[in-house]
Length: 451
Image 1 (cartoon, one colour):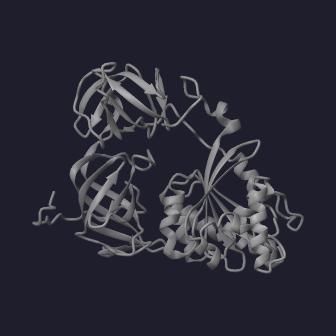
Image 2: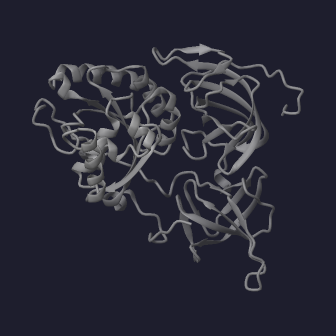
Image 3: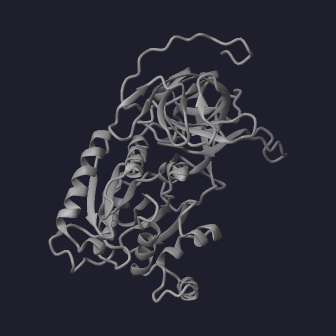
């Protein structure tokens, strides 16, 4: 369980502003300079330990480089260092006097787009890098589409390597205009364009003397000041049950608690709750947090709820306020990003994991696939290949309590799993769509997976 020193009432956004945690992800095509940007950000903000910097200097010198290769601060895997590209998601934690940060440096190569989905799924902001020499390319569009689908609230377009185009304002302006138009059409709510040189340090932490035509913030200034909403009290309260605690000891002979991490919202002692998908109701009799009883708990605290009634609850159930319960359904419509090498096809038998619950499911139809070049929809493609984004209809063996992804990024998301080997196939967002797909006739199946 996670520790906390917060009081029994949720803090307001104003109270949190001085120490707000910002989660952000970096994305971009291969060699656009993502790892160099992150390394420069860490180095120039004095967030690198001495031994880390010394290690980077040694490796850089062994390669014959005159200056430290700051990309090595995040390229941690040996394969990454040898190939000079990012393969895995590299997480780093740092802080300034104004804010704490968790950053995810995600891969740029098309075959690792799945890792970008992982890194950006919890991000408050995404930094999309573009090489000033190449402009907006297909992978840039793909990253913008993923950010839009994942409803990342803020997107920064970092036009990198401005030193290689003589710091020309016209080059930056053309790229910023093209990307902003594309991302806005996708539905990205806020886009900030910043011209930078990660290698030279221009506009990363310190303002650039080479681009006096730019009057906006540096990357770090924007990260420190971008508004981050942490509405702990008024979102839909959800607790996916992870474990049922029944010690059955002499000290606690009748103890029965339902443990898990609060996915969203706030729970209070005395509140009426409903357990889904069964629909049984009760009232919160107590909340245990780190061995002590509290009157209120909120996301992302890990707690144990005690209920007044002895009802059947198990792992995978969802505890919600009775007056704010999501609908349960066996028919799931969602937009997905397919992340596996094997294609997702109509009729595919899968496992659907939602929160702590996993059920059998069938892909009933794939109404459309998104074409990234012009955002057109290819109707009924029949399959989704690796990194494709498309619309799917799924039938589950058991009803699931699903929020819209627009209402909750935690309980409106799911993954599809291959039942044969446990491979993650697809990441899905309930209700998200670039367009309304046409109705699909359900033909049914006769092999034991027809629900």
